[in-house]
Image (tube, rainbow, N blue to C red; front, side):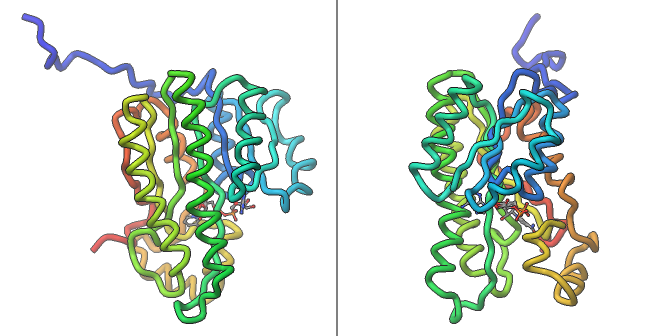
Length: 265
Ligand SMILES: NC(=O)c1ccc[n+]([C@@H]2O[C@H](COP(=O)([O-])OP(=O)(O)OC[C@H]3O[C@@H](n4cnc5c(N)ncnc54)[C@H](O)[C@@H]3O)[C@@H](O)[C@H]2O)c1
């Protein structure tokens, strides 16, 4: 007798994580984690829209040559500016006609103790790490919902969203906000088959990781990570790929720690 509880039924997970025909927007698209993610998304057949801030415009000409013709669109976008975000997403939709995946990778950190945190630095970290993903997810969500084909929103948070680390007050506040934002969006967008999740890396070997952890301080930090090292960019990209693929279709509102065990307690 047939039953919906038939163990032989399959959802149709694509174990190759094929992304052929998909368009992925990556914010802060020229950054360290972003570039490793770009490589993996491209290898699985996605076409990319790489959003870069105005202050990185001089990098674009040399990077463009590394991408196949037609596989990557470079779009200037300051994620903290609503008009810039709106224009960028319109340009992506005009060019590709669709958005299937959004990776919110843009980020900024400035470490200061609570009493020395200056207001402008507080505002900037909230703007880049929280307001930016909000504006970009709102813009992408609008297009995804109108298209009716579902979608994937992947927010790069941090281990600092969940545990207290000295001098991280503004960054932590923004990234913890990002976890909350992700949960609300996950719930509201679920009827549209749009998954919204966060990835929370430990220190990653990028310019941002170096800015915060270079030198002896970093060596001390590694001792607190059970696996004893910092993360490589492709280890974060591997999770981006999984969350972009249909194997993660049942996961939404989740936060995946990629922290070598730092937050085990
Ligand atoms: N490196 C780490 O140790 C680490 C750890 C946990 C989480 N993260 C997060 O991972 C993400 C990627 O960081 P990364 O390590 O690749 O650093 P990165 O510095 O290489 O990349 C960050 C990118 O964000 C861009 N950016 C900054 N302000 C922007 C703005 N206003 N508009 C658009 N883009 C802007 C930068 O130009 C840069 O390209 C960030 O969200 C970061 O907070 C990093």
